[in-house]
Every structure is written in structure tokens, then in C-alpha cells.
Image (cartoon, rainbow, N blue to C red; front, top):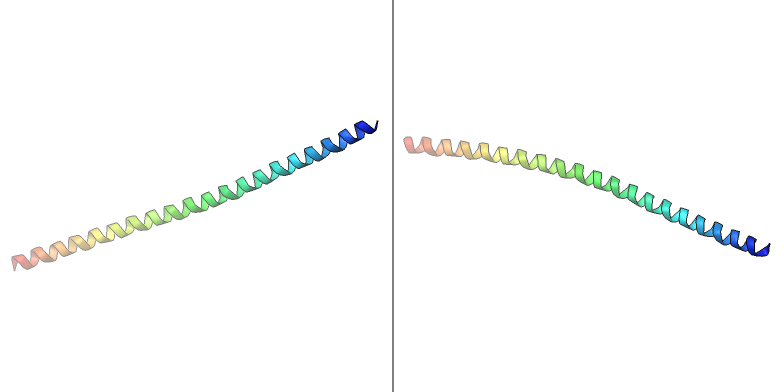
Length: 74
């Protein structure tokens, strides 16, 4: 009977430790998923701003080209 009590105690300690480990893994995974989602959002914003900057640069370039051709014609 003493052996079963020791076995039950060891088993319950192992099951508790396993459950705690699994919970820790899922908690970390959840945090990492949130961080990845935040990084993806920020990356999308940076990409949008980059596209806007390139469009502005293209407009500036075309205006400069117009000014240069206008000066050549005058």
C-alpha cells in the first residue's frame, strides 16, 4: 500500500509538471503570435508609406522633366 501511495505522488507530480510545461509553451506561443501579428501590421504600414513616397518621387520627377523641356523650348 505504501508503494502505491509513493507511485501516486510521483505520478501526480509528473502530470502537474507536464501540464505546467504545456501551459508555458502555449503561453509563449500565444505571445509570439501576437508579436508576429504586430510586426506584420507594421511592415504593411511601412510598405504603404514606401509606395506613397515612390509615387511622390515620380510626380516630382515628371514635374522636373516638364520644367526642363519647357526651358529647352524657350
